[in-house]
Image: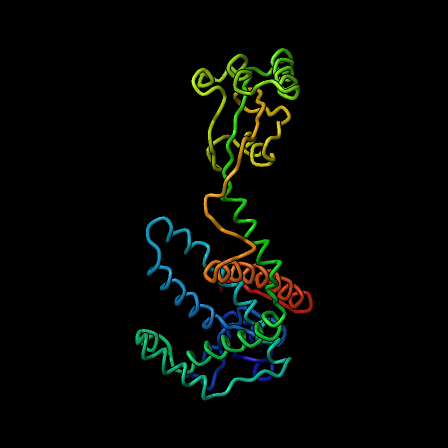
Length: 313
């Protein structure tokens, strides 16, 4: 990592700065690409990381999906590298240090597990990657993870949210086709009949213009999310059992909906979770809280930082 102690910004920003030891020998200075406070990344470091990530993407994706991933890679990686430098800067401010023994052990593990990495990068480059990663992890542990608490209430709420997604409702409807005043008046009259206690199936059989009403008397059975148009589902899944909906307009016309009963596709008791489901919801809550805390933490660091990102030469 180059610091301001070893090179001035004026020299670092030269696109192809050249120093002459003598007329026969020239040494090319690596150009600075990203500056975050007193830390920088050079072109060579950025290009090395881009190459590493592109290799990983080529192993995981193919075809158009690969092309889309590669197209977005540079901007995504540049954003991530800025965040990593913010983390590294914060680690130094907090006085966090990494034992060299730990770094060496990780280098040995990486080289043993992935010999191709050793063929592509020098040991010093690998050590630099590992050091940055470990500093980032330490900062996350002290400034993000330490503040996350997955309360029983939050776990229960996450469970209830999933149960809501898995809810099925047994619905009936009356449809009046058209969109004019006459159609609206007719569906309002049907709603009034139902509110006055009229039998639903008989009312649907007499007044519904849904062709299936002749067979099912307006009874659609149990439905899940994603089966009907958005306006219809939004109202159906918001109703309590026994409730009669207001008029719902869709591309098919006007509807009155009633919910006869409800059930949950998966038998999950959010007040008495088994160990497997509890662990699943704890992880879900943790990931959400971690993301929220990290976003706020990075925003705070960016607000106080001096950040410069330069285009490729």
